[in-house]
Amino acid sequence: TSVGSLMNTDKNILMRNKAPRILITGGLGQLGTECAKLLRKNYGQDNVILSDIIKPSEEGLSNGPFIFADILDFKGLQKIVVNYQIDWLIHFSALLSAVGEQNVPLAVRIFVPSTIGAFGPDSPRSPTPNVTVQRPRTIYGVSKVHAELLGEYYHHRFGLDFRCLRFPGVISSDPPGGGTTDYAVAVFHEGLINKRYECYLEPYTRLPMMYIEDCLNALFQFLNTPNEKLKRRTYNVTAMSFTPEELFTELRKHIPDLDISYRPDTRQLIAESWPQIFDDTEARQDWGWSHKYDLEKLVTRMMNDVSESFM
Ligand code: AKB
Image (cartoon, rainbow, N blue to C red; front, top):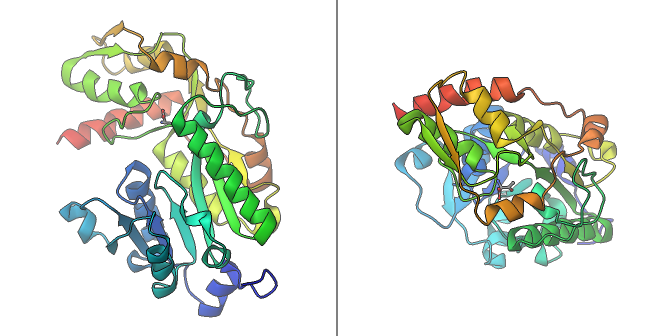
């Protein structure tokens, strides 16, 4: 497909006069499930297809279409994009193998999430702008920088509608998934059950964070922004920055007898190489990003969410 003959996704959707048809890879993860709920509400259950290589729960199956798809099987992915007439591909799987070829992605809007982890100890931390030194020291960060650059390359070279948001620590009621920012999720679970939490980061470690609803709203708004408005393909987004100490102080308003101790481990080193204040002014200017949840609202909301998840 040459760039000239390319049917872009907006034209595709207009021609069908319908909502976009969306494939979410890594669809059973933290972002995948929540994102599917939001998109299904907006575009219809059947227009959002989840894929993963793990077995879905009954609930996962009953909420809309699910298919097995291994993103390392490029031909298999091509088949899905063609057979299901996919317009937008939201790529939550860890590695961006889908962008390794030329033809299919050109007619598809591809979203890949990146992270504050795409920065490293040589990056300015406070604030961290969109474009600056990126020398991450984790394999997670390295693979994200790789995905950002590959996507941007395909955009400039072949016109691929690649879009990428760098998220801060995302806080939701899902059980913590092994990240460095996940203390801010774990403390709600353990605080509610045991009234006690041992934090693996030092009390003063400041990191950018956002509530899941803000994260999904950013994703939704960004995916719906017309191409002309985008001045870049990769944007920083965030809502707030706080330290463990600040979070626990706010949380004690809800759990007064919460007992906190600190035992920093290797995650401290990772956190110290990441942004403290994430500069997302360009996202706010270019496509109107704004967050709803500050620290106080986040804690109130999480108390509710996590209590409900125990019922
Ligand atoms: C992590 O802590 O690894 C993630 C992230 C910030 O990308 N939550």
